[in-house]
Amino acid sequence: MSDQNNIDWKLATKLIRGGLDRSPHGETSEAIYMTSGYAYPSAEVAAARMSGDEPGFVYSRYGNPTNQMLAERLALLENAETCRITASGMGAISSAMLAPCKVGDRVVAANALFGSCRYICSDILPKFGVETEFVDGANLDEWARALSRPARLVLIESPSNPLLSAVDIAAVADMAHQAGALLVVDNVFASPILQKPLALGADIVVYSATKHMDGQGRVLCGAILGKSDFIEDHIDPWLRHTGPAASPFNAWTVLKGLETIDLRVRQASQNAAALADILAADQHIARVYYPGRQDHPEYAVHSRQMQAGGTLIAMSIKGGRPEAFRFLNALKLVDISNNLGDTKSLACHPASTTHRALSAEQQASMGLDESWVRLSVGLEDPADIAADLLQALSQI
Image (tube, rainbow, N blue to C red):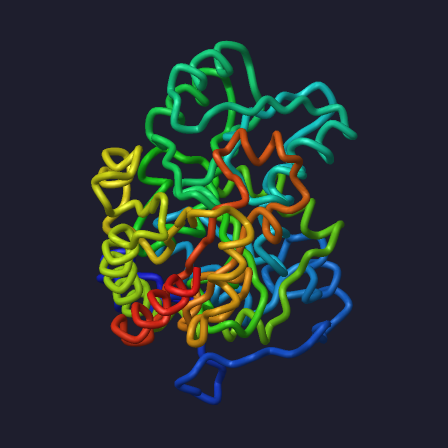
């Protein structure tokens, strides 16, 4: 356990020093412990570690020094009691949802979710006897109705994927707790830099650390943060026995990404805010959704919860799918990719990529149709990004 966990440190210091645990060699950059197992000085020590009577690592599926440094740094960043690292963002979300649920339990979820998250709720949970009810995440009356009876878990994204809708985290947290439910928040779009769900009442926060935390398109990684008792009682047995462990190399890469996440997210957010205004004025665009713009339907909620508008923009292209594809194919600087939170600007067509597994009715329930393009704004010069977007729009 590292002693580099001063909760009074400012953000920039936490991102660089949090969880640092140097080996006897005194390396300045965190060490990568690429090992599957660990040697013990005696059989008695091996037995004590395996039983939990003595601290120490026993197998990298259970824990690893590099992964532990990342977990401690993220817990410090989020002011969470504890954190666990997983192989991917979906490994984190699926574990946080499946581990605490049992036959007869009930889940309430916002209907605007990433396609794989929606699939877990609508297709996987029912196989295990868990009921899922979807609600309009922005409608507090629907939340009140759905949570007027007991539930085990509530799942939300805010801003949501892909149209950046908002959920009032504090209000839903209160209703979830009254219904006996845990509130799980996927905070990947806002990142831990711009939004703190635990401070707003969430019980569990999950991340795809692949996105802004690595932020440079290199590795897959996920994280689950929350109270120690919940993590130890539910998440630890699940992770230990099902095995979605992160590679120490991936954890190390994310550790290095965290050193610059504050700089990257804030600059990319500034770029996105400027580009959202440019796109909103273009004749080929039917609608722009950006959390930092006052014309966003849930601007008041976003502005109350987030420090800035974030790095994502959703835009509806006039002419539907044919013109959305024409726009994407005309891009020269911005890459067509379903990733996000990268230093490179990326664009995709959600209806045919990230949310393609959902039916037309399911897509429509979250306001998604074939006209929408999701833009993840990177760190290129905003003038160059704007020039590329405008030349591509001119091809429509």
